[in-house]
Image 1 (spheres, rainbow, N blue to C red):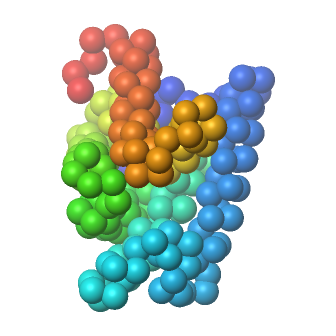
Image 2: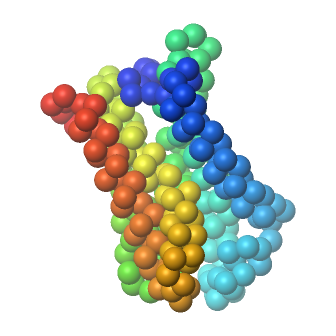
Length: 221
């Protein structure tokens, strides 16, 4: 699979883009700290403390949960790398390797495990529907991006990768919105969870579509 650097990419020489890199690096560091809470393996660490019903009644739950946690942190990083502009041969190789890893880990582990976890999400039906839709869209947009690059349709590939990464960023945006809502509205935890289940990815996807429309001139998607 020959992956060409994306046209809409971060330019490290731009102050704005450097700011974006810095913001991502900060939130990625926070996500890494959360991930390290699950090392070493434990059945009652972090989020699993409030999922003991699933842990005790569904033997596969904790293994699928850990598959999601351990792969998603790499998917987030590999996805971000895709939006850098590389000119050197080494940079282009990095783009391709990161792209391979992003697609493989996402399609094989991160999205399927997210779908399973969505079926058992807190917050009742509204939250479950949100996480299920998100996981299906995450898998589908990434798979379509893979097909587009195989067809050497680089613009369409970029657009679908942008949609995929917008959904990937929900790992960060969901937690951001949680802080905002808890601070401003002081809602009960389950009500907050129902709201952020949707706020975590819907605005991201809307922003991605706006960017695509502004940067794509009647290119078939």
